[in-house]
Length: 438
Image 1: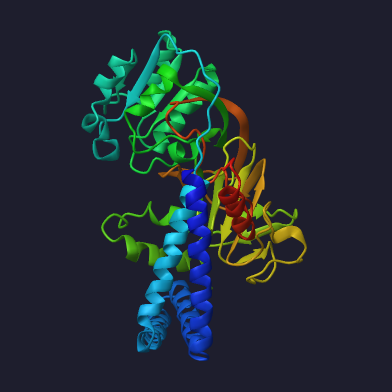
Image 2: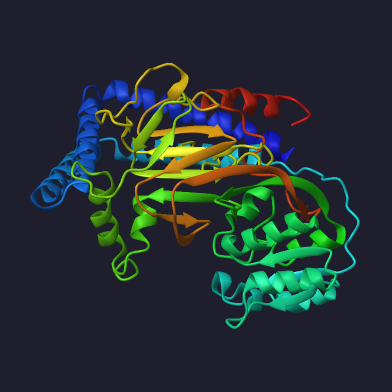
């Protein structure tokens, strides 16, 4: 019933917002066109400023600021209350849609392990392990807690636990630590549980673990269900979320990043993607089989992300698709050809599996991918800095990880029930709202 009510509310609020926006545009024509022109000018000037240094950068910043100021003056001139009402209604519609598409699946029940082990990082997530008394809660459930200390490595602790007869492994920490324990569990063929005691816990979110119920996640080994999911690897190193290449991965490894993050990022962009870029370009094969190079950033993920959508953007609908998600941001070019914002033939080479096409960001999915360069490549692997020797060989490892999830947790990604493509969302909401199965 909650999903049906939320779906009905989302449809109603979206319709009200769209009608109000259309009426406002018609009444204020052609002022809206000038607002749009100012926003486009600000975007173009800002991008040019980021890609250059010195005078050209400051010129781009000034033009972008003036254009934004012009748009603000036009918006504040009249109908400010109406515009705010439209925005608030649209945000409320998105929130209701999220509730409507949130589902809970019942996983096949699994036999509790006889010797489960929980590894926990006391520093992760601002000290969540201590705050939630995870060690004590684990012991109450018959799970052996092992604390990660500066004198030991997580890999050695996991190996010792398996050698001592552990038949299930859990990790309470960040996604980088989750990858280490998940890889060991997959090798040993034992079940694994993700305890969301890190800072962001992206892997937990997409697995269907309730990130707000840290202690309850331990019940995965008490009365949990089991499912199989994929892992991914780059040059033999396992990752659970993604590997980022390009300007951000380069910037975070520079000496001044922690003290001046924004300045370091801005200084890195021209070196990676500017007209006088000095960093060796990344090279990869596009979905059309044509070799490409360039781009501001390249993101390779363990299954594709849902990107650029109003609902559940930044999540992966599934983790058992046996595919790598690939996203290239910024201008690309054929290897050896002139730079251009759009690549080559306009057949399906710029389309993702769900039909999203070319533009500032291009996405697709593949089972394997090779990325090459003329020099070692800075990378962010599940949020941890690394430098990798080329070529980088990415591969999906389908269904190798047995995951246990508490019965009270969702058991699937927030975007698992979302349809492919934005235009399919209203129809899906209508089906939820007007059928009893919703």
